[in-house]
Image (tube, rainbow, N blue to C red; front, side):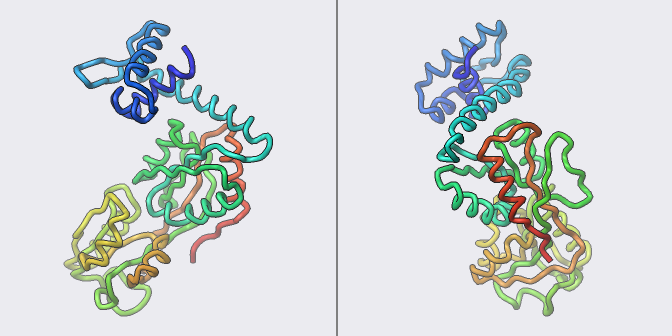
Length: 298
């Protein structure tokens, strides 16, 4: 068993097929197939059930995934540590984030990090829910994660959690005529409103559902899984969006009317990572976030 075999095995797991894994690795399909078969011979177990073009992990294959990720993470950490002896002169930092928090605070943090370490490439991977971000970090697909959850949600026990900031909620509308007078807006004053909100399990959706319970005749007009669609939907006049105030500056720059929502809900935004030694790039990112001392949004 060697690192190449494990890397190819994980590529097939993540891509779902040998063809897609080969494309992502920029190698020929036979190279991937041969590496996986050699790994199976070394371990004495089938790792995939082969049904036509589909590959399904066997019990042995599922058991190998997490240890394989740990091994590859160790190789990446060793390589990054050696490369950082003369400073962060290259490498990659992978950060997972929920969409709204990728707008803020992650954008400012990445801007500061890349200014200090311009030769480190930052990759941001998206996940729609806190569980999705934690999953990417836990499996090693990302080294750091930015999550936002209600204050009542306990931080994950298997991850280190560092609080970054707090975010409240705002309303976005194409023009002021679509919103009641006053700022903040009371949920009850949104009677009859068509709302744009996130999918189940997100803070946007939780608050939008609370608004619907208080605003007579209001309805969920659009459930958005892809947050990049929020502003176009608002600008098209489809409805009023319920979002975290991470969107305030971006929405204002787009000419959208932004009003605070009078509700007690708040999101606690945290940076999470697995216990143990971080890569030099990740350690520098965590240090930067701590040094910037992000404070709760009022």
